[in-house]
Amino acid sequence: MKKSTKFYSLAAVTLLSASVLAACGSTGNKNASSANEASLSFPGEVTHDGSAIKGGQLNYAIVAASASTGLLIDELTENNVDSTFGTMVDESMFGYDGDRKLDDSGLAKVDFDVKEKTVTVTLNGKDYKWSDGQPFTIDDYIFTIEKMADKGYTGVRFGDGFKNIVGMDEFVDGKADSVSGIEKVDDYSVVLHMKEMTPSMMYAGGDVPAYVMPKHIFKDIPVAEWEKSDYARATTKFVGMGPFKIKEVVSGESVTFVANENYYAGKPTIDTLKMDIVSPDTIVSEMKAGHYDYAEMPTDQLDSFKDASNFTVLGTLASSYEYLSFNLGKYDKDAKKNVMNPDAKMNDVKLRQAMGYALDTKTAGEKLYSGLYHPATSLIISFFGDLHDSELEGYTYNPEKAKKLLDEAGYKDVDGDGIREDKNGKPFKISLAARKRTEANEALIQQYQNWWKEVGLNVELYTGRTMELNSFYDTIEANDENIDAYLAGWSTGYDPNPTGLWGAEAPFNYSRYVSDENTKLLKAISSEESFDEKKNLDNYKKWQENAEKEAFAIPLFESEKLIAVNKRVKYFDTKYGSASKAQFNKLELTADQGVAEK
Image (cartoon, rainbow, N blue to C red; front, top):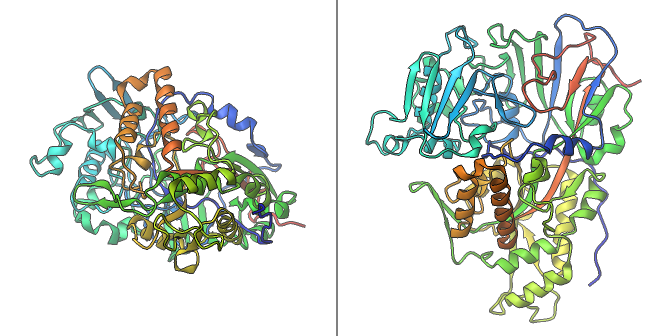
């Protein structure tokens, strides 16, 4: 068959909404910033004319097709919308520099002793206060670590960084009343004794536990009831260490924040900040009307806003990717590990590879996303600089190779209708789940189905349509047996270690793929030997090569993120690191109202 070149004339695409997680990290990332900046289509910073006024309200649009669940504490959030709201009131322990490496700019600093296998966490100040005025001490940090190890914990953030603390296993199993590896020094510092030292410890979102919650509040709330508590959700009762406090809430839609006078880095410059969830279908008109000062814009609508007169478009390489993966097993909650199903429909590597080679992501990115979506060739994206294996070809469009792989695997068109039967000559259908995002995404999925049909695969959408975001991830996480494959996206965090996404024990490994080789290669990435940069690069290369071969997840797109900033915002940049002048607590406005397009 000839290659189908038809693309549906549909518009709009939202930001990559995905489960937000801090994966794990490594070294070898030093050239990432400069390399990324060189490849951007738009500038990374802007200074607008005008003198700053005192205070004012910043209006922030969260561009998404789904409502917030209302959860705000980062110990429990699992999607981008909730996490974005949460960043204004919740704060992790550590700051980081432009290379995503932990520094002394946050609530605490970290000192490593690789030989002694210890991590010392020390608060950078002794007079910190929670937003309700209560003292903040190292006890809050210790409390959070211990409570996230509680059997009643319902979140997915209790990862390798916690399990690596000496005595954690005994504590989790109920054989000890405390974690022996947590050594409190005084009210402002603690020493964590680790089983192993890993390169991930040096990076934001890495293997040093960074979550912290107010002990004086949550000590009286059973861990299993955290999700239901008003103190964990978007309510005026929320107590955090972030730059703002909650003033007003419209459930699932909007939160108005007021400056936190107790913020450790100083009271924010603006008086209030209002966050609204705005549809990707209307965000361009809303920005042009001057209703919002900040928004991450739909890339496929670029032509409709790139020349706007009342806001500036900035660019940065997104720390996220789109991918195709497969339902290969289940997550054993009791054993806390992934278990593959040997009889899973997609448990044939050649079938998985064929599905990847059937897709023309280069054409799709150019036609639907103005060239701002680029084909991804590895599960370690180019955002991570030298750690990304640029020599990998990935699953570039090759329908003839796809057909050959299917023939070799025994999927053949027995009755001559153009659709292949299974290895036993029986009708063969692949059920595909995908999240509802935008009309452009709907067009993309239809095109995928067309390309798969051209190589003889009948791929139909689960329930016949795309799924609401939160429902989609709940269903994928549960490994619904009626789903064979799924299209999703990850926000990777700043630490490239893929263990938190594709490890044998990772709850986020929704494919449930497990193999001895994958586990061995992931352990090498996380090993002490990977503190050596050369060895670290080699370990990452080996994992990427094996992941490409096994095709348990096929990377589809990397992307540029476009940010619109109203011209009444004095300065904004897209730089990484706590030193960036564009932190929302530092922003200044030059007018009481947003500038509208004339």
